[in-house]
Image (cartoon, rainbow, N blue to C red; front, side, top):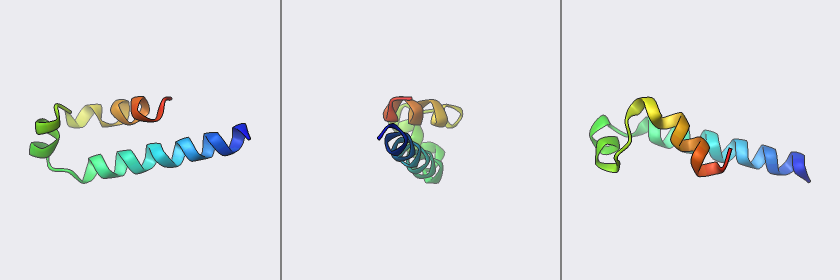
Length: 48
């Protein structure tokens, strides 16, 4: 069960990173996110 949860969290993390990477710098700025913070934000969102 723990392995399945880890895989699911990894997928959510990758999806979040991908979606944020697709945003323009302006869109990220509007959300208060710097491009260099995308991975940290994704980790926090998933709970890593």
